[in-house]
Length: 372
Image 1 (cartoon, rainbow, N blue to C red):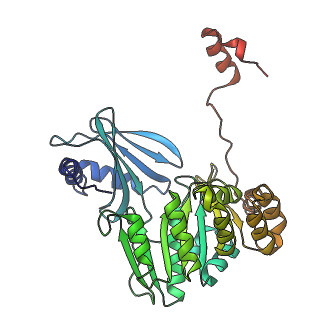
Image 2: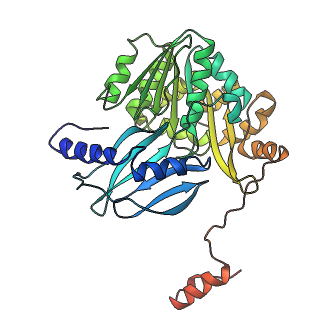
Image 3: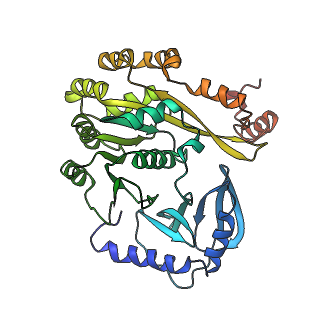
């Protein structure tokens, strides 16, 4: 998000000068477009006078190409987010500063919003979202786990089936919804279309939306506004950086001030329509990643536990609710393996046991290290 004030001009100058260097005719742009053809490539790291760096199937690689700016780059401290189109590909960009130099981290976005059937999303999750008339639907996972893609695909599927007003708040806009669908989609970019996220989110309730994409729940105010919108007849979609459904419930409620926690627990139990968590695993034999999911649905037993604050029991209830559409990561992984997917085993350190011991011996640290 761009901020007003004296720092803005230098920040914008650096951004626009970089954008002048990155187009389909520049050496940097040409190299990035070439690498982007590989289905496994997901992120680029661009730093002046350093090798172009990128991630492929979750692993970091250093390219032979070195970005050499054609003109001095003026910049200020801090980060900014925006989207960039290069050729026929679109990227989500975050510009940061490291050791006095700018660095651009660019997430490669799919060329189009994929069909929901291709994302292996549990059918019960799709059904819950498509049938929801109101309430809160959370899609959770670590950075890079595909949350944005899943949300865009689910919203598009609903927008093609209904005649609704879909209102999104994005920082920045990542996926552009296609024309010709029966729903009206109002995509609003923070920093371009709106400056104050929470004020614009409150104002959204007066803009006759049916579905509201909030994005990431980062603070208590956003969490409470989202609950309010879900309770007043809107379908609200949001994300959290959590690793499990049970953790998601606790993390969401902990954002809300303690003096309103009891009411928030009741509101959450009444309002949530589904919590979908996802992870991406790498299959070395196939050379690609695949998702596994965890899904918690609002059955009476689940809602009762949330009202009583019995969050630790949610994992057992999730496993017991398999016949009703809920699923755990472990069970989902089992189904993926039955379909022929095999997750690769990642070495935790990259070093053998004796190599670690030899290093610690040289550093006189073996007294705190036990072999075997």
